[in-house]
Length: 251
Image (cartoon, rainbow, N blue to C red):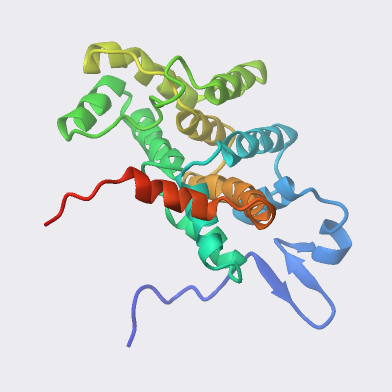
């Protein structure tokens, strides 16, 4: 049974034979291993081209910005999973990544698509009002802890200005922020998941792969948390605290 499009049976990422492994046109052992840093390799794997120094600089910056923020839901899920299944380190990492969605961790992708929409329409106020009409949050704005401004977002945008990479997406982000007091009745700070897609899109990273930035960065963090869990376990402490904190109101 034929399902979906089946007329392009090719990949441009990797091939190998008995003597050579070729990744994006480069010899893995002859040109990449020992010669290429991982951020460059990541960019090349995703886009097919070697990043410029500016692109690599901002890829490094955003990966550091989003990797770690304490005992957030993805970390709690991973550490509690590891406590219950210490033989499945990979499963605990997966548990932490599976919740990468529109509210936590995956929101950079949502914000990126919103920014692309605003860039295309040129009307930030209308875009905000359309979201409010559907009772949806404004992606990339507001933070439960950093209500005075997300320091990560502020720094990324400052670096973008200093490096002269402010383009249409950062411009759209600023325009949305300026439109908020009139459209929703109050200002909101730009959060890191608003700054990341604005910066990355303006330096040439593909929109469709934005979620990969958060996934890659958080994977590094989860591995760190799970290593700590092997030495200083808190998974069952968190589980117990959750059970103690939630009351029963059923029949």
